[in-house]
Image: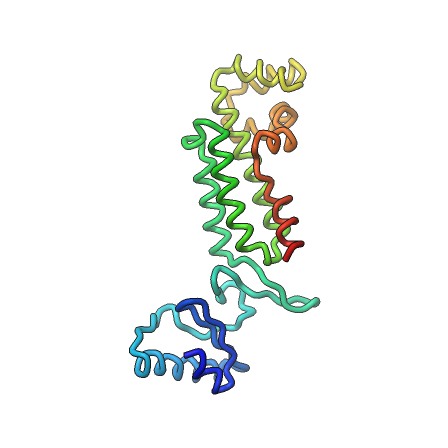
Length: 219
């Protein structure tokens, strides 16, 4: 297939059975879809998934997706993005790994998050996604604080631990005895003062923003 379409002068990108053929116009792409499908099915005796096979602009971010990536275009030229569906899967998995039910012990949970996130960033690191990574990184910090807060359970334990971590007694009492939910508590001054980014990183938190900056620069 690769050799055939190379002979025809058609730019072809293929990874296993995922194929992208490039054309200069919508009409040309329709003809290309028809001829390539015919070649695969009649000449090579393969089955083409008609539902997934289609023509679309590579700059249509919501529609074009190849190996989890999408292309974008701005005044500076062309750039690579992580497709919205890939973002959704990434956040869903992080949410699962940082759920209050799974975080019975924070250290193993942090390690699982690190292994998964590191692999994901190594794959998608070439993409432009600084703002998205910053957003999801902040969200994940709150998720981890929420898990730790839940593990402390009793109000007196929460107050005692907050004071140990340098929080003034009045703020610690206010936060430790709140009847609001765990998610609300992670946004209080006392909890953020105690569970700083530096302290969480020293405990094993994998900072996505720092990791992405390192990986993206290397690309």
